[in-house]
Amino acid sequence: MKQIRIGTCLNGETAAKVIPQIIHHGFEAFELNFWQTTGNVDLAEMAKQVREVVDEHGAVISSIGVFGNPLTADGSNADTLASWERLIDHAHLFGANLVGGFTGRLPDCPIDQSMKRFAEVFAPLAKRAEDRGIRLVFENCHMEGTWNKGDWNIAHNPTAWEMMFNALPVENIGLQWEPCHQMLSLIDPIPQLRKWAPKIFSVHGKDATIAWDIVKEYGVHGPKEFAWHRTPGFGDSNWSDIITILQLSNYTGTIDIEGFHDWVYGNDLEMTGQVHALNYLKNCQGGRFIPNPEGF
Image (cartoon, rainbow, N blue to C red; front, side, top):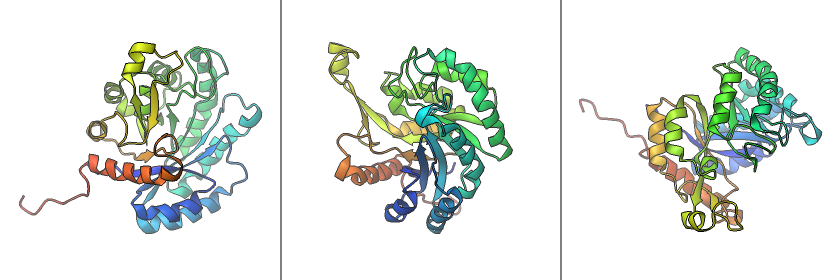
């Protein structure tokens, strides 16, 4: 078993500037993402710039992604589908074999009504990716959506995952999973991870804290917050268990810290929290690799 690389998620537009400033902290991977569109970014030049730094330090670009609604092509999402295509075509320049994002959703319709459109959009994208040795991964954030209404994403519930993979039964689509989003739905992430590990190609390092006293007294639809996004090391999850399950499932991806969500370790403390999470996650898998002695 190889140790899982621990990295962080970055804005694709500023990655070339940020990576040289933070890579010395020990980040081993970088996930580069865009919001709704890759815009006018020269992806080939961007790949060249970031690879010069990560290659020198033995790090990798774990995945590239665009987070929008590719099923609608409306308004600010008009370029999202084309951005998926661009990223699939350019992923090899980054040394990445994963392209990720939201599935999209037919706005304010039940999840099952989006399945036909999901298959129509992602069948050709999956084929395009397969031809280039790329796998597609879907983030599991609900984006404030429910089963019956919402926008952005259908891939936030395990029943939806079953429907998605039945609607598009190909080997190169999977999940970009994290415990946080499942915990916010009061789903226990550990048994879920055991079940779904074969379809998890990418993991986000983000946790949650659940205030069960508030849930028990006020429920989940009252005025009081009952759950908070947290940076790993500050939340409720046992990341040693998570990493063990991934290792036992022969997971070959990375864990990329998804920052800028922790209400405590944010703003001026953002990098403090992320470096803590980096070191915490490395320790959860035993810390620095130590080879066995001969004859041991």
